[in-house]
Amino acid sequence: MSYLITGGAGYIGAHVVRALTLAGEDVVVLDDLSSGLRERVPQDVPLVEGSVLDAGLLDRTFAEHRIECVVHLAAKKQVGESVERPLHYYEQNVQGLQVLLGAVARASVPRFVFSSSAAVYGMPDVDLVTEDTPCAPMSPYGETKLAGEWLVRAAGRAHGVSTACLRYFNVAGAATPELADTGVFNLVPMVFEKLTAGAAPQIFGDDYPTPDGTCVRDYIHVEDLAEAHVAAARALIESAGGDGGPQELTVNIGRGEGVSVREMVDLIAEVTGRPEPAAAVTPRRPGDPARVVASAERIAKELGWTARHDVRDMVVSAWEGWCLRYPEAAAPAGTPG
Image (cartoon, rainbow, N blue to C red):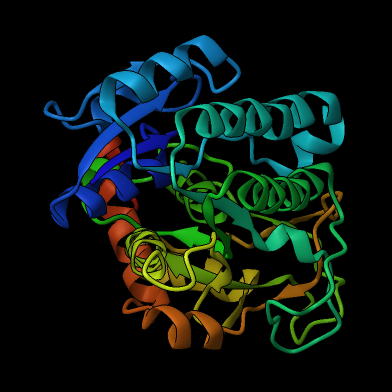
C-alpha cells in the first residue's frame, strides 16, 4: 500500500517512515523542510518539498503516487510559541489540515491517520487519562489539535474515509542515532544542551501540586510511537471488511507511567555521566499542566500495541544521537571537548 507521510522529514515523521518501510510499505514524504531535515528521508523514498496549504501540489502528489493512506504529522507544536502566535498555529495546524482533507476527498483516499496530542486534555484531574476524559486544552496548540480531531472525524464521515486520531504523550529517544531529535524544545535535548555546556538545566516551575513540585509526564519512546502508527493504519485496512462504512479510532499513545521533570533531569545526568549543576528553576511556562499520564488500555485492546521501551532506553538512545551530532558532548566531564 502507498502511504503519504506529511512532515516525514521531521523527528517523529522520519521514525514513522522508517517503521512503515521496515514493514514493507511504499512511502512518499511531503515536507516543507521548515524544521525537517532532507537527510532524514531515505534516498529510495520520494520527497515532495512543499506545504499542506498548497492544494495543487497535494492533488498532483495524490495522482502521481496513487496514495491509499495519509499519515498527517506536519504541524507546529510548541506550546509556548502557540500562546504568542495563535493565528500562525491555527493557519498551519487547522487550515493546513482542512486543505489536506479536501485533497484526500478529491482523490478518494480511503484512510487517514492524524497526529494528535495529549495537549487536547489540558489539565485533567485524574490519575490516568483515558480517551473518554473530557478535553479542555490549555493552549492554542492544544486547541488546534482538538479542532483537528473534530475536522478529521467529520470529514471522514462525510467522505467515506476511515480515520485514526493518535494522542501522543511526551516523545523521546531515537531508533537510530541519525534520527535523533535535533531541536532543543523538548525536555531531553534541552537538558543535554545545558549539561554539555556545563550549565544548569532549566526546570519550568517547581510549585506544581505534584510530589516534587515539578510537572509529571508520560514519556513514550519514538520507536514505539512509530510502530503504533503502523498498527493504527493496519487496523483501518482490516476494518474495511466490516460494515462497509468508514471507521473511527481515537487512542492514547503512552506507557501509563508518570515521571517528573526533576526525576528525568536526574536520570539524564546519570546516563550522560555529567554531574548535574543545581537545576535552575524558572517561572512556569504558559499552558503547561501539572500532570498528564495516559491510560494505555484502549490501544492495547484495540490494536494489540504496548510500549516496549522504558525511560532509560529513551535517554540512552537520545544521548547517542546527540553525541553523533555534537561529538564534543561525548568527552568525559571535566576534559577538553
